[in-house]
Length: 363
Ligand code: ADP
Ligand code: GN1
Ligand code: MG
Image 1: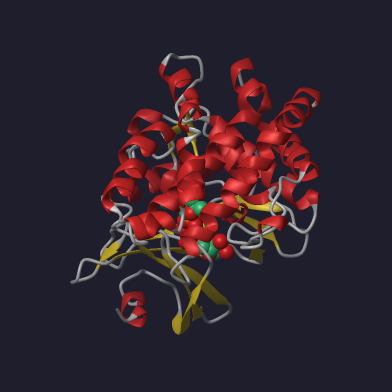
Image 2: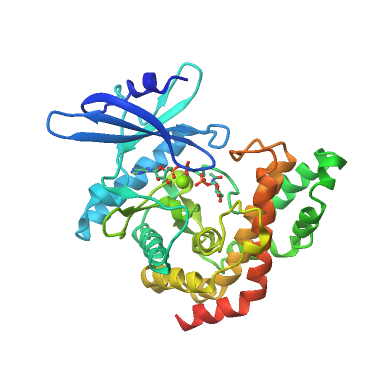
């Protein structure tokens, strides 16, 4: 694939200057392309959609166009700056939502949000709190979005029990003893927690937790901040916006951003839950989404962090057992390291669960 050739298929403004790979996401590949116009410069983001993960790019892009159009109007209504507070997709030269190359690779493009930056970790609790505000606001803005028009881009995405039965167990049965020996402790860690994998999903099935339009991948690096003020500007990475549980959006942010270490830190003595960061995020998220949450949702925010972190670790372990076909890796045991890391975080969350609950109750 020659990315310079791909650039030609989008209705970008100006004269092409250069294009380079960018970002640290685990699924899609991201590129930044610079263009020169008569009076200014334009920067665009191009992404190759991972079509082995997102099997129906057409439905995916329909979702994203619908969500960003809706957000644009909501932001305008509330006096915000829609040019910087939501993503703007650029159509192809023949007016399509995305470009499909001859060999079946799919690409999409959007305007680079000016003077923005994203972070893989938060240097201060204040910055992390701002990401909580952004995701809380995001959920609130989509409160009246017609959820029925959304396609499920990845079925059972946060159905932890389903992933246990239909992904983790099959991966275990189809992998060999040698591989098992390298992760025996981690396999036992997951199997001993099978009982908690279905609790939240079952509550939702029984109508005790409401389905909302949620983001479902609320990592800190999926928020853009203003480079100068460090205020949160825009929620990005909208591939998994689908009906889901508010709890999972809260929990996935905590999993990633309130850990004292990076998601792939191999030294497990460095991995724990930072309660100050937990408090800061909860304050931010609840300041925007709190009023709409039901009591059952509020009561389960802390527990959801355990479930979602377990789920993520189980997904990394599953991918390791499957020969690393889903998440991008930098070295052969990368997914195993990530799994161990997530399980260390689960252990610490289990210990701190009462404190986490007390913080939520206080807020
Ligand atoms: P992935 O699915 O790989 O995580 P993202 O959509 O999150 O892809 O994009 C990867 C990174 O690219 C982001 O973390 C951010 O730094 C940057 N980025 C993406 N979209 C924009 C944008 N519109 N403006 C500025 N930076 C962006
Ligand atoms: C993936 O694409 P990215 O890096 O934002 C994954 C998330 C995981 C996350 C773990 C579509 O997110 O579900 O929580 O990695 N996205 C998808 O870091 O599977
Ligand atoms: Mg991302």
